[in-house]
View 1 (cartoon, rainbow, N blue to C red):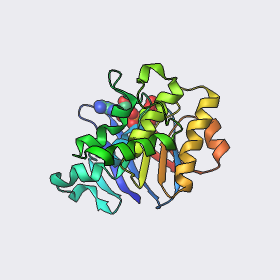
View 2: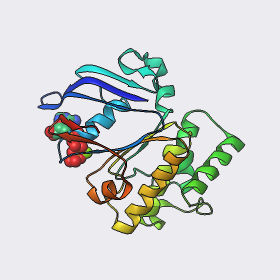
View 3: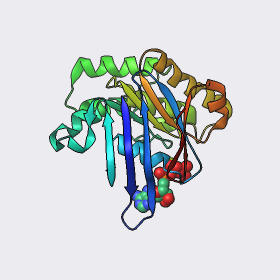
View 4: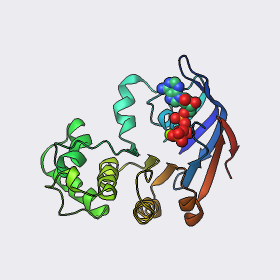
Length: 219
Ligand SMILES: Nc1ncnc2c1ncn2[C@@H]1O[C@H](COP(=O)(O)OP(=O)(O)OP(=O)(O)O)[C@@H](O)[C@H]1O
Ligand SMILES: [Mg+2]
């Protein structure tokens, strides 16, 4: 489902963020991507969802070789991946419903189908009934759930998350990670970048380790 082969990334003016990184994540797998600050975790996630391009190397996601993906396919490709950020990036002046609906509306979907999908996504993250409220009236953990509902509303086969528990206390972190595990149990492939050793230890899933842009192991 995800394959990186000999991937290098040098940012303009920057040092080399990734140097010969390679790993594969099979369909239906769940893994943590870990390593110290600056190791290149976020860079890998950005390459996978095409927010950045590698300097060298080959990346294949959901069967698409990203270097060969025509620009016109980009919006469709993005809908195949759900992305969750640490700071959830919700629009505070919009309702929870509107926040979750946004990717569908941008894709041109209207009416009952939007409503059905948004309510189903909110149901999956345990926030059904809160759709008329606003993000600032929710706890940090609940806001993160809205971000996850928004990432899932397209029903993507792949979910990637960058430090999704970075701002949460231990109990809320457990809830969020358990939610990812539930989606994985239902067949969604999941890759989570995290420093959270407690979650890594607790879940006993695969761990892909990075150190300063290099692979330390992908067992
Ligand atoms: N847009 C950018 N321009 C220049 N350099 C960048 C950019 N983004 C990241 N870098 C550099 O690339 C390296 C890897 O950064 P990255 O954000 O991928 O690390 P990370 O493992 O996610 O770290 P953290 O745990 O702190 O989030 C760092 O040295 C960083 O300074
Ligand atoms: Mg990061």
